[in-house]
Length: 510
Ligand code: AMP
Ligand code: ZN
Image (tube, protein in one colour):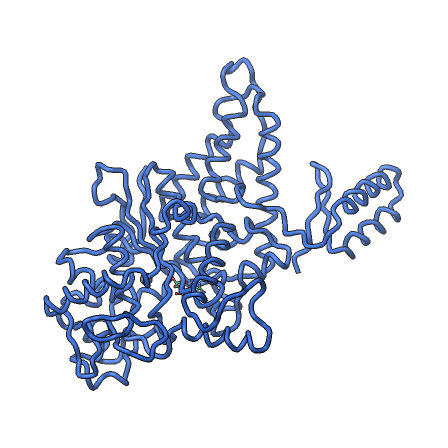
């Protein structure tokens, strides 16, 4: 089976083949977070879809060499313009935390020194790693073994200076009268190939905005910053152009090049990364290496919305994973909720959706537990889950149709009947069905996660004994008493559900 993937670069859905088709190795660079705050679940929608892409390739037998950067310098607050303006997001975080410290409101568990932006970056990077691990992102396991797979730009300054020098030597970059090193967009004919924001459309004002402040010193208004000398910037390094800091775009070009090579197979990000960030990455990388491609396929996830608007820090309409766990959600439900809508459609986040995802997982888990218990029972070799597995993978190969894949799985789960036919094939057991289910979870990644709600201060033994007492009351047809016990549980924040499998309970998601 071959993966068909929509490529933002060609605007086509194409069959995926790695650079070297004889090697089953894929090189994959994922733009990661800027660690100036806790990542919100909108950010995680982009990261988790990259994880789904990686897992799909792994199901198809590829080894995926994935790198995800953790940006700790140079990402400016006004990142919609190529030549990002405003303040460095890390400096904003340092100021915010200094104020929080003064008023005794540092984030829980934080002993971070707000005057040290690197300490601030490390604090949020650690939180990001924890949240990513909780959501089952495989890159985190890789990075535990090899930390360079989640690189920090501040550790690649030497390589950035070297790429900027190459760009200057090749006349793709220049030092302007303000001392800043700019990339010259006119020197690269294919500028605009990813986003459609060519120099002409930018000039006519149809494309993304350009920074007006620096227009006077640039050869072209769309030229963007590679290195900015700034002796007052909190984070600065010596360079041939004075003490200063790198532009955000050059960071990813350099880390991708250093860790994965001149030409890579895949590059991912959220839809807002297409322009300017990824357009600028292509320009720098191709001009520095002289190669006709930087990344062969570009993968972009559309935004997670809340009430029709983008979930974002600046709008204040966001949830972090931590917020949702505190409300009783499980990491598995959050993961499923963020991957179940096709990555090229907007997804709208609701608490109801999260509850539905939890119900879905509970149903799969019940079947998994049952199959585990009966795995030695003889069965037909072509059980519903074994058949579903092929169709599940086929849906994923259709441009990551996760909703379709879940539909296939649910069809098998909903109509589950066990064809126990010991005569049919003496060697087949329900173990094969269990294995098929677990293999599908290699993509969904929900069984591995801690799916029991964070229980807070719930008294579990008391809940268990109340549920037992309610069952006895029902057996004895004492309906009034059974209802009273259910209400008592509700008052404790516990919802119960009766079905053919018995009574289950969950912490109520507020
Ligand atoms: P940042 O930490 O601001 O660099 O953002 C990290 C990633 O999250 C980028 O790839 C963004 O494109 C992505 N992103 C930000 N907001 C959303 C959202 N509401 N939905 C999906 N992806 C998002
Ligand atoms: Zn990037």
